[in-house]
Length: 175
Image 1 (cartoon, one colour):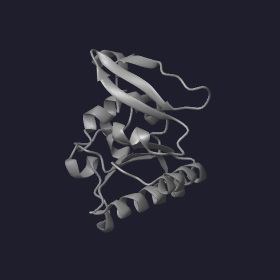
Image 2 (cartoon, helix red, strand yellow; image 1 turned 180 degrees about the horizontal axis):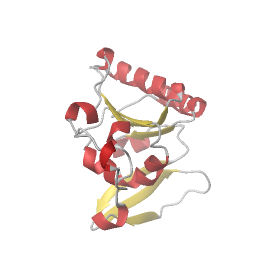
Image 3 (cartoon, one colour; image 1 turned 135 degrees about the vertical axis):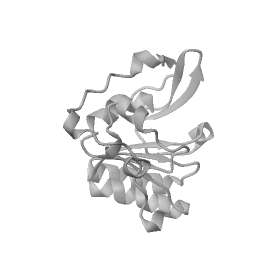
Image 4 (cartoon, helix red, strand yellow; image 1 turned 60 degrees about the vertical axis):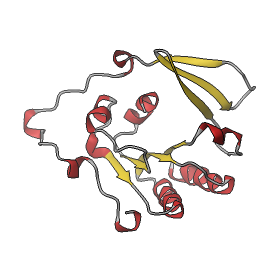
């Protein structure tokens, strides 16, 4: 998530949808990345079909700044539909898949393989525009290096935080 922080903070004026994340989003971590917690929408679906339908609707609507989708397996034709929907809605789309999915076909213009390393993250290029490369990038991930201070709000706009307000519930079809 911290790797995406610069991109997410730029589109954080619109909602950022997290669909099927492995863990509940943390409001303080989002705020530290430059995303106001009330701009984050956390959705869960009963079935994979519901998840993919919701992802496509979010992307096509153009109402959200970004979609972060966690999926273990997605057929290439559905990845193509998500890609086209993201283009139509001008919405950032990040799909998190296991490293084993690197062997699967995908229309994504950029595919990265992220692996933890001592003090940071090794980033390998599974697919990219331009010539292929076997080189990896190392990104230091110390706490101080990637987090920015959160701007102070005016005292009259600060409201007490509650789990219900910070983590929006999914509509009935996605519960």
